[in-house]
Image 1: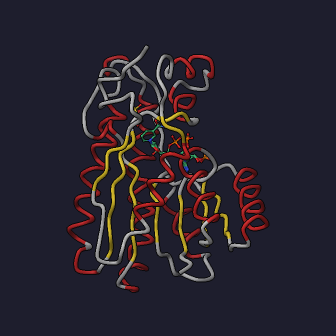
Image 2 (image 1 turned 45 degrees about the vertical axis):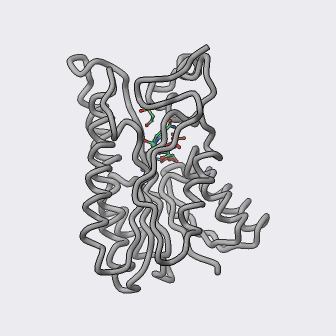
Length: 250
Ligand code: NDP
Ligand code: 8X3
């Protein structure tokens, strides 16, 4: 059966790869992000390639008014799956050298943005008495690592919020899954290193990280389980990585 999948951060990385995979499997999409040209190009491509409905909503998840406006603008308020994926790391410094601007970006996007979008969509799922919220956490939400500080804190918050959502939404038949990927090569490191593309590539030196498609395949998988089954929490790494600390570099 065709579902409607709402994906935040679909202009790049996991969000874009997920949009492609869900469209390939005949699901309708609501794709979101700040980069309008990329969003519209993806919507056009997926509609023509797969014949699915794709609505693109351009907004910044840090702006609650924009989030509410965008979701209110939807012609049909039926959302089966929400993928809270939009997020970023900004900066890779010891905490004593951290920049306030980086901290605020990460806290506002990864925690408050996820909350704003969820707050707008949870009532629709409660009304339906069904739905699936998939929060993209991280191995950084399981262990803190050197220079990870505030990013790790935001992903620990996603971990706590995922547990809380699962408890509070239990009586409404809503699944809550947290997926915690380890290193995957997307635009993530480029953004974290403030646009230094060359340095970003060195993050993956000596080992094979996951790809955006790898992560999307698991996001897709958790939506294919029977109605009565829910993956609650899933940590996903490439074979070269054990956790935040141990990577087998050759
Ligand atoms: P990318 O940088 O490739 O993609 C991030 C996406 O988030 C983009 O589509 C971007 O869209 C969107 N986004 C960022 N800030 C905002 C904002 N303020 N408002 C709306 N959209 C926003 O990174 P990934 O695909 O790797 O990251 C996706 C998620 O996965 C993030 O939450 C990240 O923390 C997490 N993660 C990543 C890992 C990795 O190693 N790559 C591992 C574990 C977790 P736009 O710029 O157009 O707004
Ligand atoms: C992204 C993975 O290891 O850079 O969340 O924190 S890591």
